Length: 280
Image (tube, rainbow, N blue to C red; front, side):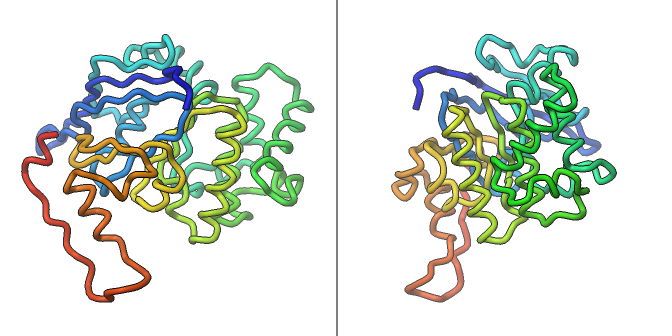
């Protein structure tokens, strides 16, 4: 892991105004990120996705973000104008969403969408952009990149669609990728293929990665470091390789709830929670 700090998050809070009152989705989250693979795990509603969205300025309109520090290199992400955000999103920080069905434009060919992402941040002609897009489809292990380039999103499988999303997010050459449950909509075999592709690209390009997931086993095998979130708080930070040695009862409870291939085949245990965990 590089000692260089790309992203610094200090006391991040995300609060949503709702008809039933304020909802505190993220509460005092702090971490620094170098050129490494950081996993953020937790149950649905733990605040992991909202943390990723806040970093990229994608919090919903009824949400409020505050932080003592939210910096990417020397850029203060907490106070960017819409024009300044356009220079950061995609070009320097990209986000891979969960399901390509809802992220790809159904009325544009895949090639046109990748070219659009590339030319938004690089002043090149159409021929060069097309060449670069096809090369990027090849880089994500798509066997017939020319055919996929000319296809529409509904003409490719879910796994191939996710590879297209990875290609689209990586083609501007960002320094940081935020991947929000990028494989949860895929079957296990395709999931491992997509993760291997993402792993190779992140390593070869020297990028940082924030990998948001509920899958502890996947995170432990893929990431360098893990943040475990519960009700908006980070309750534990641990090396991914040492996740089985977790100390916090919530992390240990999540691990105990994982099904095992051998041994006892009785019902999985129910995670018992304590009120103090929600206090950080």
